Image (cartoon, rainbow, N blue to C red; front, side, top):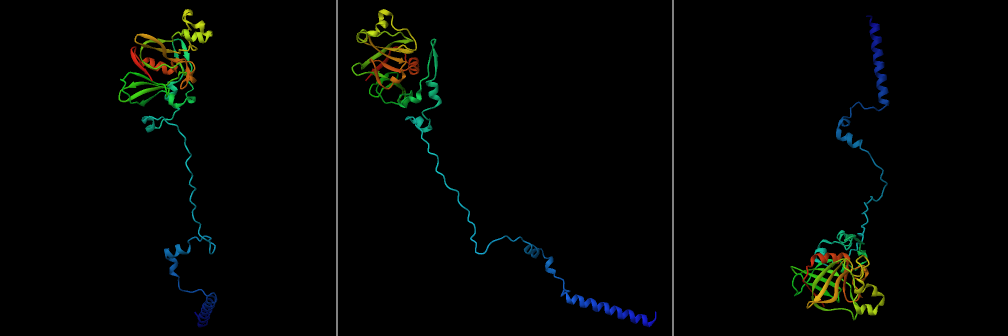
Length: 274
């Protein structure tokens, strides 16, 4: 190759290198590689998201939920230890069973609206201290309760209606006779006071058994010294008279209660009315 050609090529190479150097120097691009960009910690720090947070803004504090008072509950409970312990309310399935509709002896007794009755007069087992032997009937005329004494200081307590002033009877006797769906025959002195009752007198065979019969579904006849006292423990179609003094001296009970007592009491059961 001629020397002139070699000289030309050398001059051209030097010119290109000079031009490239001048261009790179103008852009201020360093030739030293930044090796920190390859560091994972630096990359994570520089690419982490940044959220808006105005200067001097107070951090948001979590608000506590309002505390609500519990819904008040009003429950009427029995006064016996069992029901106080287990908290059974007055209106419960037991009373629906006790005082529901009963079909008996060809008659259908209506349910007692027990929710309208003072809870004291609903049938229940209670603690009862007495010197009377187990199996005795005790009628408390002041409180309008009939107790049937049970073992272990307990008694079955029933609400009763009693005689008005001047007609009540007190004393000791025995249940010498029992009757299912009895006839009712008013005593002669009652017929004398209420002549409209003469149609039901003994001479007229008394009032027929039924839902309107004053003796109700059952009757326990009280005798003393072998003589009929003419006083009875019996059912009544007038459920609202239980707990009151409205009768002519007899002891009235809900029909459902007298049926229950009738099945528990044998003839000869002692009774005390005080």
